[in-house]
Length: 113
Length: 112
Image (cartoon, rainbow over all chains, first blue to last red; front, side, top):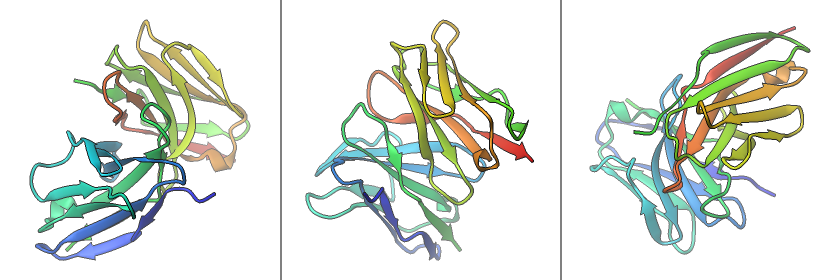
C-alpha cells in the first residue's frame, strides 16, 4: 500500500525558471494539501484541493504560485519565475476525507540558485 | 489568528526513560489535533491524533493528552528508544476549514 508519492525529491532551478512539483495521494484519498517548510521551522499551509477543485488557497502567495489536482493524474504545484526565497521543502499530504488525518509524502526540496 | 507553539525546543532523554513533549495552542475553536514525527530529510510521519471531545488517547508507546481548559496538548512517549530521536510537531485544525497549523517543533535527542 504505497503512501503519498512526490517527485522530484530534489529540484534545482535558476532564478526566473519554473518549478513543477508533483504529488500522487495515497490510494483512496481524494483530498490533497500542500505545505512549505523552511529549515528548522514548522510546516506552513499553502493550499487544499479536491479533484478538479481548489477548496482553500489562503496560504498560497498571490503571484507566481498555482496548484491543480486534475481528474486524472497527480496534483501539481507550479512556481513560475522562481526566486531564491522560494527555496524550501514542499510537502504534500493527502486524506480520505475532509476531517481526517493527513498523511505526508517525502517532500520535494527546491533549491533556487 | 491561529497559532500553535511549543515550550521546549530541544529535549534530551535517556534511553528507556519516558518523554513528554508539550504544545500550547491559541485557537479555542480547534477541534482536531495531530502529533507528527519528522526525521531528517523526511516528511512528517503521523503518530497519533485526538479530537476535542476527548482528553486522552493512547497508541503504541504513545499517549496524547488534551487539556482544553488551558489549551494545552502533550505527547508522552514511553520507554524512549534511539529510533525516537527526531523533531516532533503538534498540529491543530480549526473548526472551519481543513488546513493544519503547525507548531515550531521540538527536537528529541535520545542518549544511549
